[in-house]
Picture: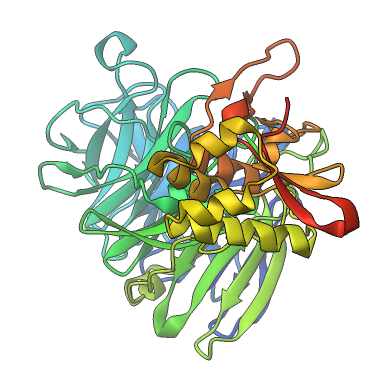
Length: 498
């Protein structure tokens, strides 16, 4: 079974193994931390404290799946998970756990070692839950927590090594309740945040903190310096992790969301264009698709993450559109536990000259054909063929193609996306029109431009009088112009004047 949240429609929806859906619950405020019980019989969540619709106080919710009965408990608390079969949360003063069982009222379990006011229950577990307790900034830096394991008696034990700092955005218990995975978000200032996925085992020293992936997909998405974890889910013995841009600070084309399967410290690329992806038994899977264009939210619409359509694949490999405007989803633990490791996807790459401009538009076939002949000659290291094709070029270009380095740079340049110019095209398209890595601008970078920036190593510039984001424009030396001559003949004319 699968549960998913549609915040703008104010509902939590359930789906069965064949993709049939029904409303599980209405939500007054945005649902935060939606979690399944270990046996899949109940669903729990808490109202988002930042949602103005929860102005009269947060509520903890427990939904019985079989009966459809929902219990709402006023709760000054932080975080939610399951401790065994009971819903667990942490009181806002850090003094106690609140536990809610089936058909029972909330019971308070005082912590033998209380935690800070800003601590939160980060993940559930079979015998313990994870509490993230803030560390002093002078000790560990901004936004860092220590992780603590708390059992049903209120006994508090540190994850070892004790007081090891980590940032904490979201935590998830493993299907068997013995481990926890969480997403981090270390900040270097406004709009400079980088997330990762980490794992730890209850009662065992140490944590798994793999270096972030640095493959072709991450490079093309220009996520080396800043990114968030936008999706995290258990799948069998590993986790799926999606990295994406900071929505309020960076351009958000679908190709910039990059998904992996993490197992035994190794990353496996599984695709792009998904804000989150998860897997179940018998080939079932679900993914939130990033829309081609992110629609700005109205002032009264509270929700920050990119919302998308939820696509579900059943055991017959048939795809179903389950809902639009989805913020998150979760398979039951039993479903996630039986998920096989997802197959790797082919990493992005290009062998020939691309077929569209840096704005996704087609360009004249005769110019593309000439670009391909130039690239073929450069790949063959054939200086004579290049000189013949470059008869109309400027002297600097003719000099450059006479060197092995110049020919290698030519291959790379012709692997980028061109831009349209009067009577011709220029590689890369950024030579025709610069772009800014900032959402909502008239020159916001496209996915093609981001890939070209990474491919060609174009450095960033800033124009703080006009834009807050980083601006990209290639140097004069890194350009190649083709144009239509008399009679429609394609000509290589070398570099374009700025």
